[in-house]
Image (cartoon, rainbow, N blue to C red; front, side):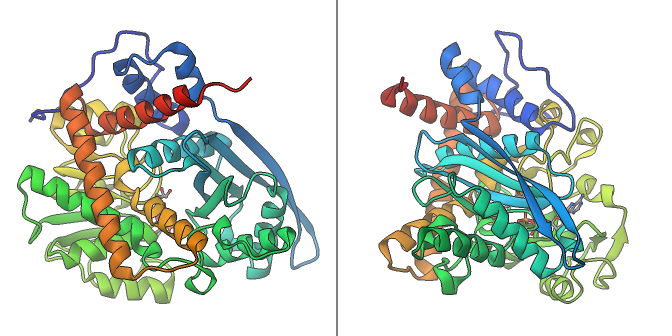
Length: 433
Ligand code: NAD
């Protein structure tokens, strides 16, 4: 089956070599190149927009609970701050690399531009395994990482948020450390904070809710009814579990879920509330009794209407893309599809809602949180969810229109909108010298 409106793009210059795996920054650049070519971006602007504004590596020495001193490595990359203060999450992972953080920072720039949010893009990380750290060690790492980056962070400069393995508590420690140094409480320096510290209602569910909204919008385009539509969700953390739950509430049948420990399948549909209860109690899905255990790699290739990869980068590759059977892929994770797999999915007629649109609900409600902190007035959950839904639908429609106009995929349509917006703003601001 070939996709009706979205055709592969013909390039007029030598493209960035497309890697299949391992380098998310090159994967991002491969898509950037196609969009830049279609926009006929001049070489100076091309080079400007591909280069991160700042890349900082910090050393984080910590006295561990056993008295030994361990050194951790931390990163913060500000990709671009042309549209406003830079914004982006912080992830804690043992295998995180600077290249990965660079890609994630660039995706944030494009995501904020696609969503019409007045933020630039950034991302941060600490190379550590939180499952092997005590709360005290985790707090020390977070506070020292923040202290090392005081010159970068700030409510008008660069605003972190949660990402893989970081949460509300970690955001609270960042906000407190920053505030101690500034000698005043500065709630707007991070988003994804606990409600009691100026967090926003709806922030925790925002990314999964955004995934649900764009999935329903895509279903409308393909005339798939939500009731009874089958869905498989890879990753059962903040994004995956909320997306699964909300799609289930819309009448979809969640036939498969997975996390780092195991994958489960139930043709009749999995009871998502029970799976969430299970993970709250046992931390991991492994051992869940409401479905049949299947091999990890099977989930992505299941017969289903919608696939939501909501775990990590580079899960859909040239190896498994030919076996994917979903009609819609909603990229809850950042960069779950390798650039080399894109043409295979186009050929198969899969409608891919790209990460920079699909998972933008998180940064959208982070933006709402930042606005509320600054005006000192907090909105109702109903207002937040309505505004989120409106912005997600508007951006989906804009991306869909761009894709039709340029005869490209939704992914390239989203990059075209984003790059065009940042490039135009840069031209008006000019280059300071
Ligand atoms: P999380 O830590 O809450 O959850 C991640 C989940 O993925 C966990 O269930 C984990 O066990 C699972 N997982 C990890 N590796 C896996 C694998 N190989 N196979 C199957 N499952 C695996 O993280 P999160 O906040 O839900 O983030 C998930 C993805 O969404 C990341 O790519 C993140 O950058 C992206 N994202 C998150 C947000 C947000 O607001 N949290 C916003 C935008 C994008």
